[in-house]
Length: 233
Image 1 (cartoon, rainbow, N blue to C red):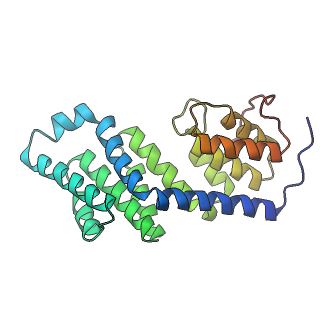
Image 2: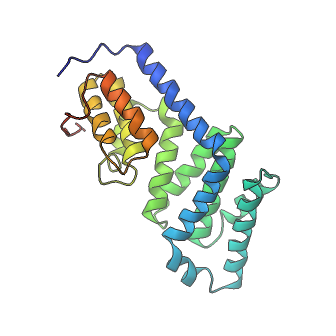
Image 3: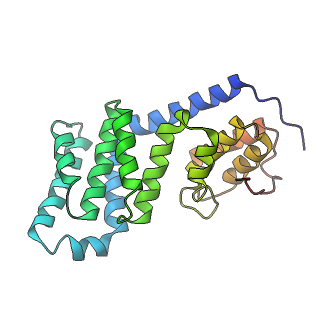
């Protein structure tokens, strides 16, 4: 195996900038689609639960209708009173309605460049034990992505450890951030192996896999021949 080149602070900074640019593009260019996807996730992940706990009461039906109306308007670029309306729904007694409202509020905050508020909303979801784990995991990924530059590498690695595994639905995003944190720690060999593992995982989004192939190669690892190695905690 070829020896990886020297990883300088400039290189890490350039990669960080590329990742930030990708994240900004994802939240900006695909903003409306992300909101719609959040609704789909919300309904799919808790279909029966929503039916029995929310649709049994008139109040819950009205809340669901409001969420749908808000997301439809925002999807058309009509933000208007959406933040205020979502803030009200974020206090709803229904866990599903509350989570959906918080995700929507965080997305709007990002669109309006209010990163601090977005982080707070994602953190609120991630810390809520009453919500489905899939919601909490997604919120933790989004929170960490926004906080990445302000966190110490070991904080990123520890926080994402449960999700930076091949059998995790969030392996691509969590693994990528973990690998970048490893580079900042000077553990380039481990980072390269993790990038290679991400690149070979067919469940990971293609965009993330392509970035991982490039990173692994830059760090001197042939993706086709790389063998998975455990990440030191």
